[in-house]
Image 1 (cartoon, rainbow, N blue to C red):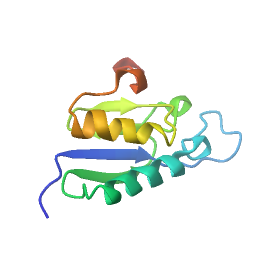
Image 2: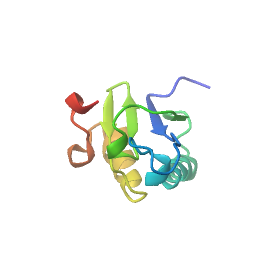
Image 3: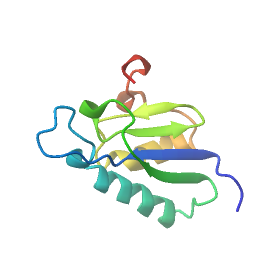
Amino acid sequence: MPRPEKHVFVCTQNRPQGHPRGSCASSGCAEVMNEFMNEIQNRNLFEKIGLTNTGCMGPCNLGPSVLVYPEGVMYGNLKKDDVKTIIDKHLIGGEPVASLMVPAEVW
């Protein structure tokens, strides 16, 4: 299998309820991760997009967080419905979705 053109990292960090940093798990990361998996499978994008769940990437208050490489673009406060937009515009179309991006200085 060839190396994918893009790699998506979805934070699935889980912390105890009430933890001061919060966590992406309590913000709906499972739905975001599942939507990425479903869209990649339904569109047969396995050779174009790699997908990995990961621990904390920093901006816990902006979760669920997703990091896309090789560009190093981080998205935050994502909802399941945002996944199709990211795939269509960024991962396939090559243009990051500015309205969903986390400013680089935050992370």
